[in-house]
Length: 463
Image 1: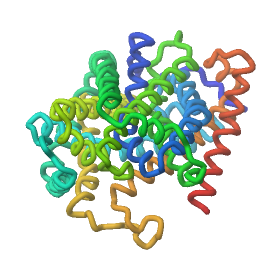
Image 2 (image 1 turned 45 degrees about the vertical axis):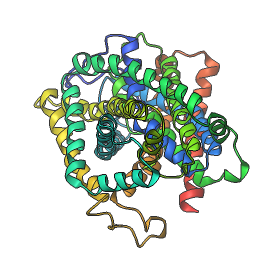
Image 3 (image 1 turned 90 degrees about the vertical axis):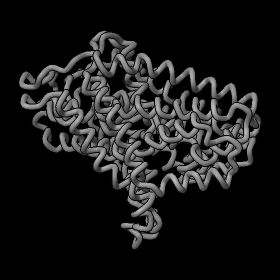
Image 4 (image 1 turned 180 degrees about the vertical axis):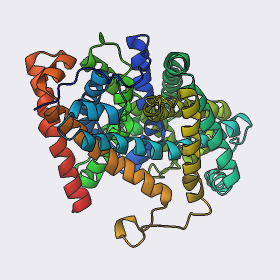
């Protein structure tokens, strides 16, 4: 018998709610928009060859990530609980404890992501200070590489910026939904879009915009393969932040009068727009200054600081860009820490003001593994005996396991849960869609998304 639970458990403390639909949308877009768009999307795109990756990414967003996002929204708003409790309640007697493990897996994944996310976000703060102090003036490509290498070789400096970023995140979440998260995102999200649009306009004027447009939007068939498809799928999940329960958590704070499909489309469109704008901001500069787009994780730090060093007003433009990266990172980190805090807050013995800083501190400590992956543990490759992973550091393995394994598989399970375990009466009531569109959503959650994810794994990981 399908689950028929309709409200949160009476034993669980009530969570706060967003004050408006706009506040929820800013929060949901904020948790989606982050380093995944401004750091990971450009360098993954560059390593995957350009437009073929973009095309597959867009397909993954529309056909897979968005239907799964709706699945998380249904579960979150229906129960008003954190992922483990929400899944347990809706599953009921049909494996509630087993499904709760999916929620816990998502929390673990978010903890891992936040730990290395904070380290990279700390880099943006460090480079913001470098830009402000004129460190980019007349900087050559060799000098930029040396600067970044020297920076990564100093663990104490990396730890300081990592700690500062995590402290800001922990403080914001400890203030609650309306007093902390809402207030911060109402300021940060508009600022992010203004800064990003400014950078795109600058790229159009001062960069090689035609080459960037061709690179981003004219795919070549020889680039299409299952490895690129896996990267695009993983990036879509990482970018929109589905498969680990982040969207579910914010949806638990959502008023009943918000139309979920419209909200999901706005979040997906907003996140995708930021990713594409990031490409249009970064790649014109990359091509203008002859930088290799396949630079990897250091693309925006080495390549763009080189460009900023050669352009008129580069210190100002560089400062604005790294401020943009920091703002995007903070909006996303807030959503990640909130997911973990929401579960702790359901315990009558725990409270937000205590748990948010403690969880932030724990993520900081675990993030030291990422810090040391770039210096003292730089030559340590834990899975070197496996050819596919022989050159990967601890940071590389954490990034790969979450982005390319846990998030897609988590998304598959959320789709199957919403499509098959929850009754049609509940899902149709939450979605409020005409019959045709409701059946289409069911088709994608029950069959298209799980099968597509499975096929990509079979041909890329298993083949």
